[in-house]
Length: 192
Image (cartoon, rainbow, N blue to C red):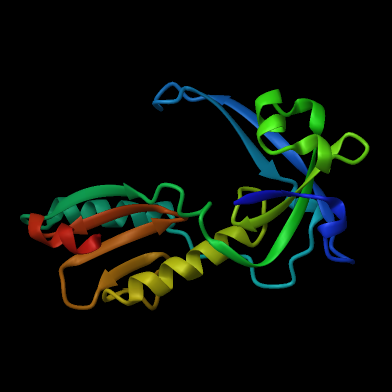
């Protein structure tokens, strides 16, 4: 997703933003103590469309009620782990982070002292990351293209409600989280 670069490798005219460190405790996750880097997207300009459709609470509740009221229907949830992070961006973005907050083993492994300028290390962002305005849209466009190949398409009048064109499968979509209704267990294998 990110690559360390010397600032001279950053194209002229490109803005460089800050890295934001987010530390959380997530007791329900396997890795309870989590630290991640997000992008200071408020400092970057993106000229394209950034909005994506996500399922409303009403749409999700209607799907759940449909599962309950349909004989033999089942429900499952899916999360496409790391899909958001692995979406290539057509144009790279750039940020910087202070060298002194990077662990020594990372500094050594990537030879960051040779890349550092005035105590800062610069990063080229090649794939989607939290904080980038365009990341959600790029990931959603990629996911839509992928799902269309397998017969799944968004419904015309309900944002983020999808259906398969022949199978009794429908789902809501919020970023990379699915709430799926299917009418027999064999149908669920078509989601993969």
